[in-house]
Image 1 (cartoon, rainbow, N blue to C red):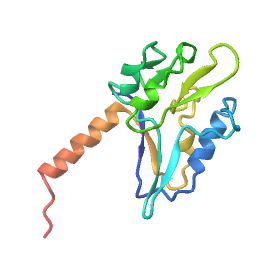
Image 2: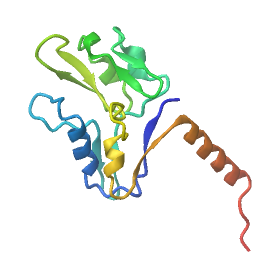
Image 3: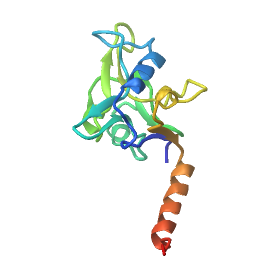
Length: 163
């Protein structure tokens, strides 16, 4: 299982600070139309808001559909080999969360898929997690997910009795 960013929608206030931090963390990479390009999007509804980003799926559909190997299943995340992308948009269609875009750049390797990369190049981790004012975002590892699942099963199997 890959690492990913877990979102607690009940804590999100929709401030979009995570979007700004993401865009700044990747500010050398722009898309046509402007430099502000976060790799996550805050979705707001009447009673809830939450950022949506790559779930770093195990057995990722985007990886499976890519005909050139531009998307690969890395140890911690779904990784991009941008120079291999042919712009077919298969990954965009296959992603169940709608969080991959194909971005065009002039020059060699002119197009590439863009998605959350967990800020792997940053020693301090994902920028969005670091700046969230309500701690609604948390980077979790496979081990942490397994521990939480075990704890939830134990709580369900052996509920505390009040009295």
